[in-house]
Amino acid sequence: MKTGLTRARFEEVFSTGKRVQAKFCRLMALPGEGRVGFAVSRKVGSIARRNRVRRRLAAAVRECAEPPDRELDIVVGARPEAADADFFEIVADLKQALTKMRERWESE
Image: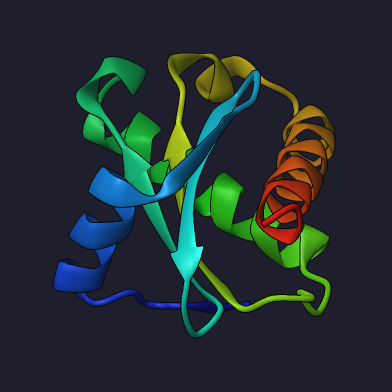
């Protein structure tokens, strides 16, 4: 998966994409080029804390990256619980959420 959604595409996916809730993040997705964007709200904490969560989510996405059956543009939204979570818990949670998202798109 590539990073770097354009602002317009990010907002489109964020507002109209299919959603999957997980313990540490929520995923929004629409068919696209297989790109990923990240959203970390102020509820997570200070700017340093939000940046750390964003970097950890990006690393978790790289860890989970497998060639998708269907190209999806995905926005990963961090939940406040992600700030205190262990990295391996985040990876496991994200893998489960990505699997759920793929199943959701395949069922169409």
